[in-house]
Length: 212
Image (cartoon, rainbow, N blue to C red; front, side):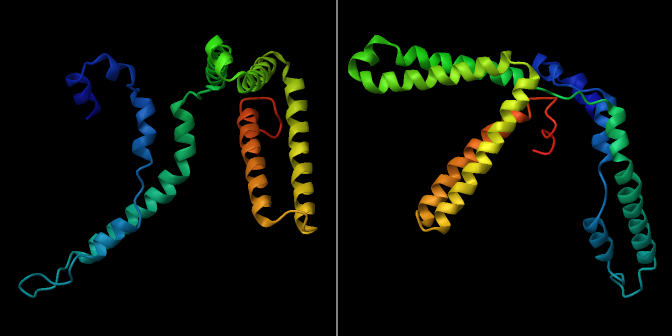
């Protein structure tokens, strides 16, 4: 079927998304059979419309069960090797994401530094200008710093999050804050951790990146 589609559809957008037969093979190889196939085989009636027994039902159930075993154990256990044989290229879009973040931050700075915004709301504009400047500095420094320094920064940030969680739990246990405040602050910490984890996955030499 892919060959038929390729012969019919010659649009450039389709051609650019096409993959080779080697890359398509794991998709076909992963088509294992399971409970649905067995249920279909067991649903075959024992007798025919005229009351005679259907003598091939046992053969159908046996064949279906054999196919299930072969696909689950044979194809299933060999699937990692098939995927490795297909040579799928890993996609690392961390650089593109950082470029987009820098561009959007710069666009935000252009907005808050607009004289019209300064005249209508100078205090919020100054506040947001400082925040965007700090965010832009963090993005550019993270890109320029060596990997060893990035790892040290990420490690310290994780330690800070752990200390903050411990302090939050202590305050809750001492009834210094109620459960609603604890949940809101915990949500902020989880958001910070999610941003940190996205940074860790873009650092190839970070030892615990795979764990996160």
